[in-house]
Length: 436
Ligand code: ADP
Ligand code: MG
Image (cartoon, rainbow, N blue to C red; front, side):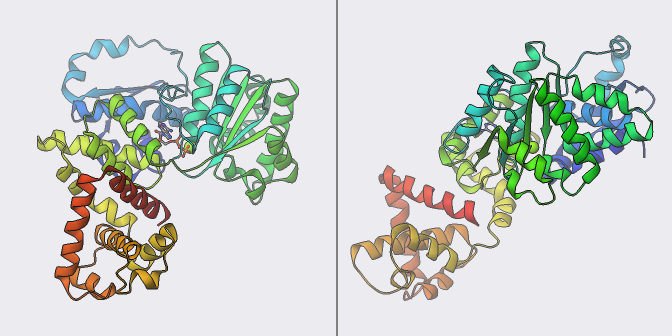
């Protein structure tokens, strides 16, 4: 396997299966034309090539740099047109000034809502007064919630001001360290990390139980902090909860500001989807946007995967993206997310939300509240599980499937005529799927 392919395989770990198959796997590496500082890949069509240019080039370049210790420029061409432009590739300057930060990770492109406004405000403030307010700034939260994006947004702002910004994952930091140890060039390593103005280290939890690198990082940290240089760290957990992290590091991390990011609520998800559609020139109706926001749990990366999937399908199959099409494309994804949703779970959830006992929801009681809760529950069970109407009738103690079908019709017409009701249903769907 050549190095170009090896790098793509590494990328596989960092992105979704769908993205990998649809885009990255389509690339072929041109071993002949590539050199030690230029990597040339070909994409089969403009769609794939554009997505890769927008989203992955910086990552691929970063992986190359970590692997080869040389700054490598990545070019994505179309198989045919690239051959014609042979000359232009040789005109690429030997040493290209480029950053490892993804330039599209900006504050403007980051949608703010209740779930992430604290982290956003903290990072923004640090980007305005680096080294002077919260140092270190520690951002933590689940996968795909925007930690890396935010951290890089600050990095982009500061880099544009001419600051020497280093962005690296803790894994890459470790690899870099090991390489310098091997090559007996630790002085260079120290120089590099201690002389920067801003150090951004992503996913610091990776250092847990790795004592030697924790030791090294501690000294780097102290040196930078002492010199008033800003440090931003991210992790999947609060410093206190990272097992295998030295006490002294833990306390240093808590010393600045610790800010969390929570899964986005419905409105934020909608804003994010709209933003991604704009960035990637995908046209979706509000109805479809709402649908995606409702069925997809919280992981924003998953949302991106879905948009690219929709876009690719519609282009390749020459169809417009409408709701039916969207539902079809998302079918596997939705079922996977919902594999653990059961009638009991949903009923319990609705029961808690509406403050009515599950046994009452499943009873034959006819009071207004009960009927309301039961209808909602039946609707959600039908939408979110694979149960058939007779199965639902049995579960809810109804005569037969026609009673269920009648309830579903009723709910559908309510949703069409009553905006508040529709919002309520969407909210519940959203909460249930986020918790599944
Ligand atoms: P994390 O580092 O927390 O796992 P990332 O920062 O890599 O997550 O975010 C995953 C993807 O979701 C990125 O492409 C990022 O741009 C996008 N994203 C996450 N949160 C938001 C947001 N609030 N607004 C816009 N895009 C977001
Ligand atoms: Mg990240």
